[in-house]
Length: 68
Image (tube, rainbow, N blue to C red; front, side, top):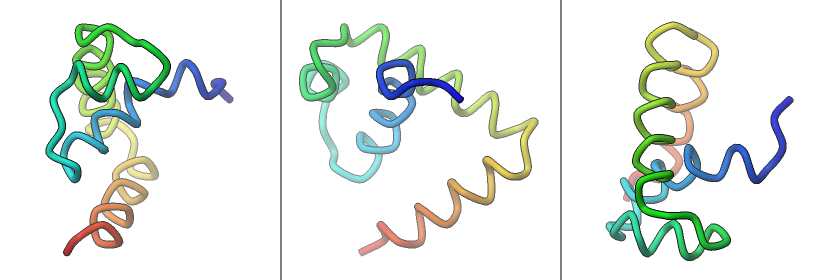
């Protein structure tokens, strides 16, 4: 299992989608990550979700819970 710091960029990607924040704002909130690290994490998460049905299901569940 990856540690929280390693997961921060991926988490920021989901937060960006629902909070409407810029990548730099999210990186700052996640402990000072650069916006490029956040962008790379978002792309990595999207790529992994194409290959991992369990991850896709978790992302759908989170999306439903965050939907307003």
